[in-house]
Image (cartoon, rainbow, N blue to C red; front, side, top):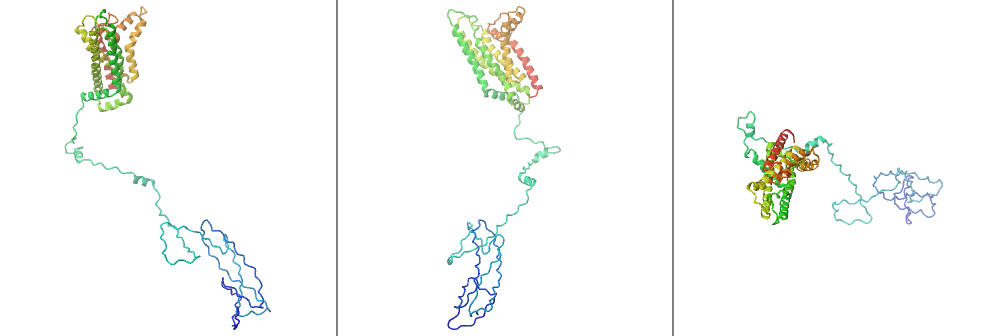
Length: 436
């Protein structure tokens, strides 16, 4: 603009001079020719904020462009006037338009200290802060499996050998080491205690002996009630007391087999022979425990039945020998029969097989003899099978055999003892020769 009071001469701007950006364009004086209109510069459209931060690239400065030369012959410009001309922006860099700036809001890190409360900032101001690159994680050495295995595996503590043991070793001059724990040699008593603990702690003992007592006493009492007629005479007086005992023997046989075959089935026999390497001592302890338990239980039950028969039946009074054979003799017979089952279990080492063999020995001769009696040629064989069968031998102890020509008195017991001794001898030999 020109001052109306006193015009001051102003230097003419060079053609290449441009006004500072943002300065107001001066108004041309009245009557001055208007400069030719220049096409407006295209303004780039603003882009939305990017989702991901992009590095800012420096914008190339705009080179000055020479304006159009003043027309010759045109009116002279007045002093104090300035010509403004819009410059064309340089070519935009690939991927970005000129004049744009990418800003992205960054969440303040948690735990960062708040800025001090100073003077309030002017409205419209914005603080930009350069973000530090994250610190690189510390590099770890490469993994070595062998080294890690050596580091993780704990080393066992070295056992210190006492000096007394070292001196007592080969070439040492000190006397041999003596343990403070008393060392006792095992004997048959220890084996007996072990077998007694086994036989009384299993359920098979309770069931087999319990059923035998029920059969012997129950059947004996029922027979006594049936024969208790004042007009009937029983001779011998104790001759019918063995029928219940015959069925009771079928319960003692499984007990004798299971005493040893059950250990073979479960593998307990290895532990037994480890604790007591003398196998003959183990079999002897089993035989003594089984024989004593069976003899006591059978003798008590048969004595009870004999007393009931003697008090309820009519007939001649039994002799002392008859009393012994009906009580102690029957107890010994059943106890020896259990030893025979023990020998069969030691030989066969199988519970089902040994029990089946013993039941066949008790019942099969009588059943076969019944069918063989129909043949004249086989009748002598059938007669011998009946006379030496276990049921007939048990009845002979009570003076009531099936056939009167067979063994009598104590002979059936002696025969059974001989057979049992042979079977047990074979069991001892097999136990020492064979492996478990």
